[in-house]
Picture 1 (tube, one colour):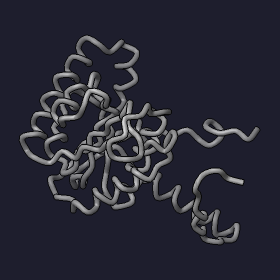
Picture 2: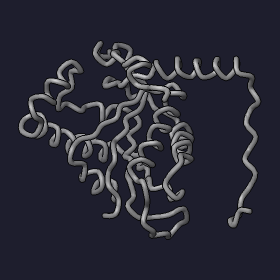
Picture 3: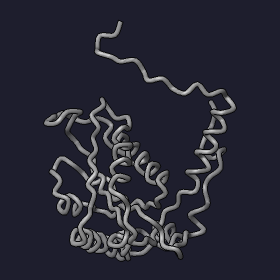
Amino acid sequence: MKDHPATPHPPLPDYDDAERVARAERFRDHMSRRRTVRDYSDRPVPRAVVEAAILTAGGAPSGANHQPWFFAVIETAETRRRVREAAEAEERDFYATKAPQEWLNALAPLGTDPDKSFLETAPVLIAVFAQRRGGPRPGDHKKNYYVAESVGIATGLLIAALHDAGLATLTHTPAPMGFLSEICGRPDDEKPFLLLVAGHPTEDATVPIAALDKKPLDQIAAWV
């Protein structure tokens, strides 16, 4: 006997095994076309697309269902300029003094550098924050659990939702990211998790060949 209120699980489609395999493979193929993009046009994205994608992320599983995330959508040109300037300052410091040579060697095939002009060009910037305290209801200030895991899952769903809407994405993680808290006006008990860039790639956008090198199944999974 359950000692908490519960509701029936919503019915799932009753696919046969062949249809399940086909759907899983179609989704795999669809998601395999997602690429990290650094060349964006300024073509706008309907706000409803971003709202739907964030609501998808907000349905992710989380520790104790506390939903320890917040998504700040950065819209104005002035705010985007501030984000770019702060991010580029951190990146210049990273490439010049912070990053060990081994890390720089690993990044070299991807062609990354301190230039983050896409932060002003791409139409969608979403700063993802992880909340140390909160809860499922407005005004809650409880300890959150499995915060990094929960926010990571939610961010994955957000990326998948934006890709499914036909948008390119990029995950940007300058270190430190405290400037995002200041620019977005977020409280001290939230920590910036990453900055997600999304939009339409330019017609001449390219992807580094090195980024296409994905591990095969036998290197990322085992049946035990």
